[in-house]
Image (cartoon, rainbow, N blue to C red; front, top):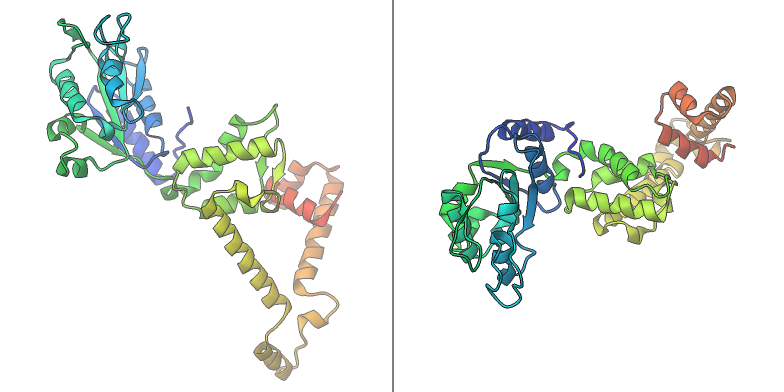
Length: 343
């Protein structure tokens, strides 16, 4: 289970609410975009509650075929229908004294909604094919990426069930609303998906690129990208130039192209003064930088290269100590060492 890093104001507010809600058995409805970590929050509520030593049972209401959902939730008796060769305990009974997490509750068929409402009201379950109700003590946490209010208006969801489930609403912030947490998630997933003990390290420019993207797939999309890079570049220092563009989400590809274009334009404007600038400079008796032995950019690069080389020499090539002395990030220093080909 991925952790929830509480660095952004949105996440701190979320975790504070989670801790309060966990102290009671109140029903919770978690709303948010797909991939934003709704099940993770449900698990955190369970783990912080008095039911933590009992089962946490998750059911995706949108992934189970309609004809099987009733048996999955409520269980069945032997012979209740074709294929029922033995008794089956449903997910609700399995979660008794613990927590039942109903993911994508907005996809639950109407007839199942009626039966779930009875469970919430009377605290009993009727297995398929049985005349005997089974008492249950279960906490319900549900989640959806849909607008349940809109589903009610369109006649797809029961209002009375919604009010039972939505005692405490929790809105999951999307990753684009807490981009300051991206580097921490990158570090976590890089360690999680390391191949044969070899962990990838993202270059500074690549990390900055990730923070420019809105991540419509949220944490799941970021997790998938780091997993992909870990498999393709095990143990490597990864720069933007090293990645095959097709391995990036299409939105990231567009941002990367735009950044490269802007950089090329900036470099061109620095190295080649336009006609008006040349006239003004000539009128003031200033020669173009490009006409001197070294341009400003080349001079600064030379100074930077010499400082890094001297410092590395003084610390016997220890990159970490060198980075601390030069007051830069280790990944930034590694990028510069490669850039200047310093041995």
